[in-house]
Image (spheres, rainbow, N blue to C red):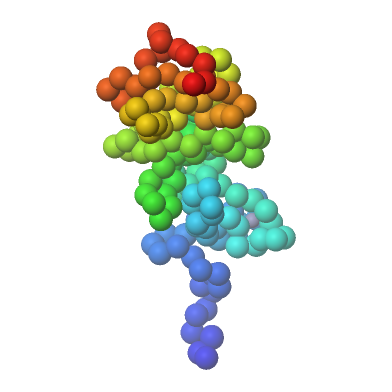
Length: 159
Ligand SMILES: [Zn+2]
Ligand SMILES: [Zn+2]
Ligand SMILES: [Zn+2]
């Protein structure tokens, strides 16, 4: 191996194009495809545990502030997995499980349960679509679907 030819190129997998340095130890950062979507981790891991958000494929100290979680108001982060683009809440490590699908580069419109404040999910029942609380079975609220939106006025509990 002509190792010497590599000179001082960082050894660990730098992103193509420009490289980004760890704000804590100045080693290169690398983009990691985590199960919650891409983020940036320090190549000095586990010595250095610095991580940064991924914002348009670049590391960022702050998550994209434009879009807020409809449940806990923390910023949402755009991420991508094998099923496509989606958004997740930066409060996921604090217990917020909000995940929204992507609608033209924005988090898809979300509706909240009027009882518990969690997100609603559109489901398909035997009589067509309806909206149920994502906390089912702890929360049993459901609403009829009208043109893809929950019809809040006609709440009925369970079936
Ligand atoms: Zn570092
Ligand atoms: Zn949240
Ligand atoms: Zn609920």
